[in-house]
Image 1 (tube, one colour):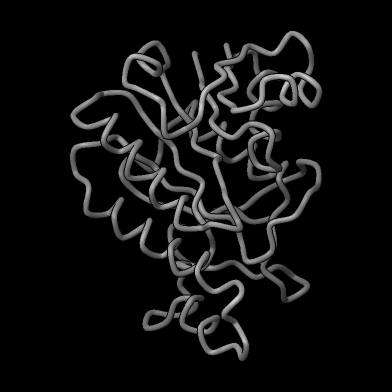
Image 2 (image 1 turned 60 degrees about the vertical axis):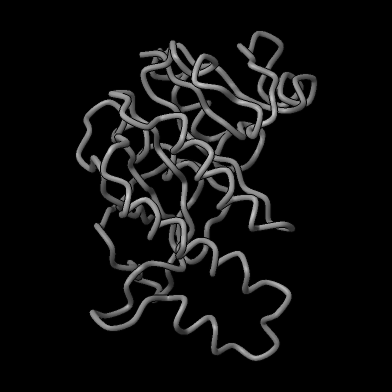
Amino acid sequence: MKIAIIGTTGMAGQAIYLEAVKRGHDVTAIVRDGKKAQTILGASTQLLTKDIFDLTSDDLANFDVVVNAFANHQASYLNLDALTHLLHLFRQSAKRIIFILGAASLQLNPNEILFDRLKQVPDNAAWIDEPRYGVLELDILRATPDVNWTGVSPQQDFIPGPASAYKTSDDSIIFGRDGKSHVTAGNMALGILDEIETPQHLRRRFTISD
């Protein structure tokens, strides 16, 4: 399968790239800095060196699946802008696009999402925009019927680490035996590649946990 990964030098993108290559897929890294990508991923990495906002439909036409692992934590509105740009490119296309979302939109209970708690944290001005935009991203996806999208949310703590075993849920946050909500990049990659190979969540969001 021909897979493109946008934002391949980040934590999520690296893990997804390595898992996809391990499984024998034909993988292209879409990055702004090709030298950095080859330093991190290897000199033989197939590259498309281009800013996400400069991508066109023609750039993505030959891929079976595109995974958007782009994340800007300083100017988090760009994550929303990137999502809407990619949706425009995939309108009325049969091809799949998978978006790595945030955890803020996960359900704590039927009447409350994680963001409802986060916005009550004192002195949150420095970081609250990223989860706020993350909630909007899911809202936009759910209002988009003519793109073959899938959304994937990590848990509240998204941390470096290898693959082991993972659990999934459609919309609810998952707490482990330690009482915490966490997932490693390796387990995220496992769940995403399984979703690519055996689609279960077309036009739906799901979440992955350790």
